[in-house]
Length: 126
Image (tube, rainbow, N blue to C red; front, side, top):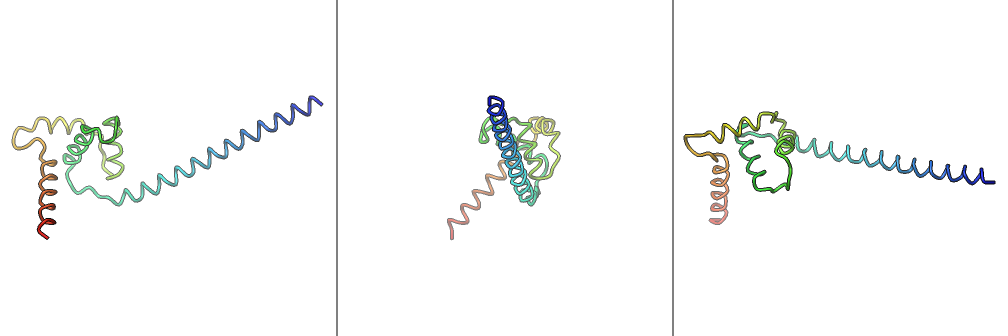
């Protein structure tokens, strides 16, 4: 009799383990499908600005902490995936932005601000 109890207990453990394994696999498939759907819709976005513009925007987003404590490397990896751009040289490009001597160091961000203000004024006139 004790042998049958042990065998049943062992079978229950195996079934529980298999249930958890199946749940894990299903969860992974669901995650992959969701990621592919997001990835394919995100690929429809095309960055028309310069690489320097993207780096300036990326550093500004990071500096605001708007995505929490995400690392710069991870942020630029995501931006690279979304816009299908190689972002490996983001830190070198940031150094170039810091070293701007003529004009404005935040040229792209200022352009964004000017365009938004213009849009707001246009909608107020209507």
